Length: 209
Image 1: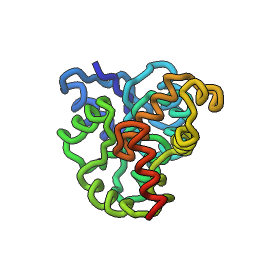
Image 2 (image 1 turned 60 degrees about the horizontal axis):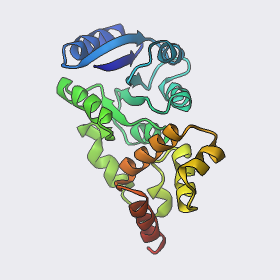
Image 3 (image 1 turned 135 degrees about the horizontal axis):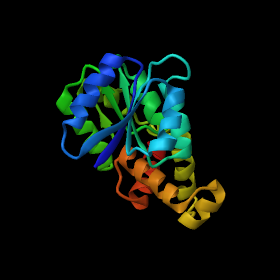
Image 4 (image 1 turned 120 degrees about the vertical axis):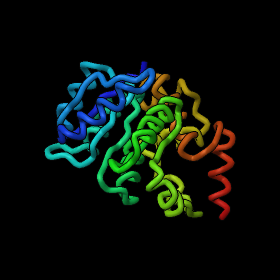
């Protein structure tokens, strides 16, 4: 059963999404939070698999809540929710470490598909933004290649390039080996490579452009 925490300050939206997800197979909404502050407490209390996070809330806001949640629980899958589908919103969330973005204009089918995709290890951007987002970020500059990585993911890439083992990364970054592997998996998905060898080749290719 996929456990979902829903974070949004609009009751009509949370009621509709909760009903939708609870009707889906192997999926349940285990809680609703109305602010970024509440979402952090809810994650600690409920241990969700996926957090659907509204990025435009008063107070702390969804982006900062996302940052704090992933710092403490990098294994949690966070999907951003927004009324706006411009490039800057999903890009900001991916840089923080979220694994998906859904416009509130997305269909119910797409929302369920997004949750299943991220649980399978994929990055998901809703159809409204995926094409123009990828077009904007598909450049030959190495800096832009890394622009969709979070700061922590970029640190892991640098250590991979230095030939560090997982055990060495654990000591340097002061995190668990499971967390290192979580970051590596996200890096592979974002950069569309399968392993360290392909990652190194990709970076070498961009260095020579």
